Image (tube, rainbow, N blue to C red):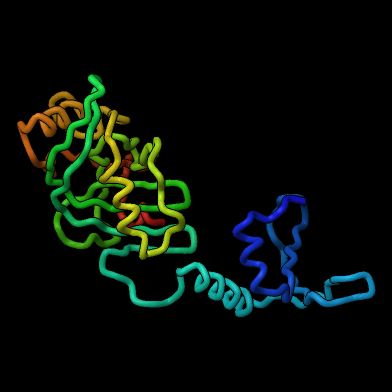
Length: 241
């Protein structure tokens, strides 16, 4: 049996086992048919499972709610920039702004430059960060159209190439600033999608002009829509789903 991690073992020191949920399937890896909750009790041979009680939707919802509260995803005030959240995902909006970015070119020299960027929508999951662009300076709605990220180090579809960047631990709302720092304060080194923008020379041409000061703004006119299978534009609702 796999041993729990050190953090889990530490957490177990302050709690006690109360019950166990057993999921029943009709075949290996088949759909779950029902679940029983078994009390944990002392028996003649040590810890034993008591008789199973069928789980109701209410009891399942209560267990999930309690776990969400423990992981900082319970009910409470949601800042305006937060678009969606779950125990394993956090999505938020970053309005248009001006940032100092850092880039390293083929000459291995590191340079910094200031740029005005369009609005962005971020999605953080454990070990991954996604960033897409949107137009306008107001909070996006579910039907707002998403555009490819006009940044280096990002693949088409928005997934960031992590490289040696340290992502924050977890997806709590309080860590949004840290997640954004992982994105904006990274060392941008390469284009993952040449045609992510409509610009002479593609994304490389755009960034060359930004770094050399030919322009200091990423204009919305260069943004390229993100298309789903079938050619339909990706919306914020689909991105956060």
